Structure formats: structure tokens, C-alpha cells
Length: 255
Image 1 (cartoon, helix red, strand yellow):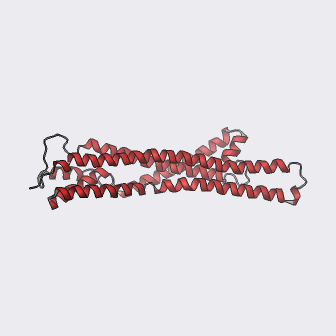
Image 2: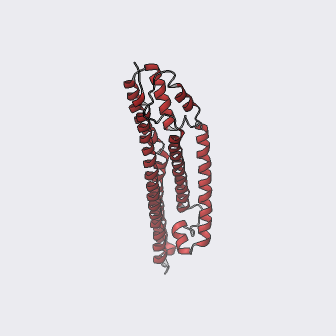
Image 3: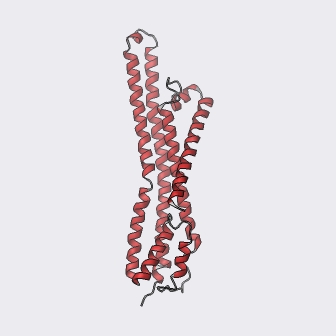
């Protein structure tokens, strides 16, 4: 699987996520009572459907799409252990040259060798051992590669981290805008004598603060899912390092 395929999958997932968000907004607008739809969608806003709440739903579903992409990548990483790239018996000894050729060919034939950690790691170690014929140098390469892969894995979550920062920020922006509009309404000379002044101001303030509440709940859900999926991927990376150590590094023999 190439980087272009990964980019295509990401764009497709984003499109599906945004479409699902639009459908959910339309469904909630139809089935929810007025109070709930005001809190969750700000449906009484004159700019409907262009409200901060609806933007929050779009960002939330985009974040869910990114979490799904990382979850899918974690499943693919786990499936790499079932491909038996390395021997698991207790008697096999690996020497430079002919012993490494079948392993190298099996890794090179994998469609995931450019995106998954395990085949990339094995290919790198096999090439290094064939060239250097040094077990110590190959083991050092394993340690440095795991550190680089861990940093690479952390970078893959940069979009999710940005979305989890963006959602509360949008919530606070919506609250500030709501307070500003409520104060402008209260300060209008035409509304000073209105008997509905207090009701209108408190209602507008309530909707303004509900924007922050909705944003914080969405961000909390995304952070929870992100930590679950990221922990799963980091565990798989550790297993890849252990797999290479047990079945490759400890079997290497060079005169």
C-alpha cells in the first residue's frame, strides 16, 4: 500500500465523516424538541444552518474519522504478525547471505512494507546485517529504529490533537459571540422597555454557554478514543520490537 493510497483513504473517510455529520444534524433538527435542538444545534439562530454548534458537529465527526483511520492502521499492524516473516522455532540460526534471502523476499513482497512498522523494521535489519555482518550493529539499529518509529507514530496523531484543540476553541468562540449578541440586544434602546428583555437576554446567554458545554463533551470523547487507539498502536510497535529481538536478533550468527 503506497502513500497515495493512504491519502485517498483519508480523503474518502473525511468525506464520509462530514456527510454523516450533515445527516445527523438534519435528523436532530427534525426529531429533537425545540429546547434540545436549541442547545445542540442553535436552530433558532437567524443564520441557521450556519451556526457554531453545527461547525462543532462537523469537526467532531472529522475527528472520529481520523480516529477510525488510526484504528484501522492499528489492525493492519497487528495482522502483520500473522504473516510469519521470521522463524519462530528454537533451533533456527540466521547467517548473512542465503539465510536472509527468504526473509528479505517475503518482506519485499508484502503490500504493506512501506506503511507498516514490522516489515519496514525487518527489511532494515536484514539489509544491515547482510552488509555489516555485525550482530551488535544490527541490535543498535533495532533500538534506534524503534525510537524513530515511536516519534513517527506520535506525528500521525497531530491532526487528531489539532481537532481536539479546535473543538473547545470553537466552543469558547461561540460563547463569546453569544454573550456579545445578548449584551447588544440588552443595550439596544428599542428593547429597554420591552417586558421580554430579561427572558430574551437569559435565553441568549443560556445558548451561548451551552456551546462551550457541547464542545467540552465532544473534546472529552475524542481525547478518550485517541488515547485508546494510540495506546493500542504503541503496544503493537513494542510487540514488533520484541518480535524482531526474539526471532531475528537473537538468531543472528556471524563469524
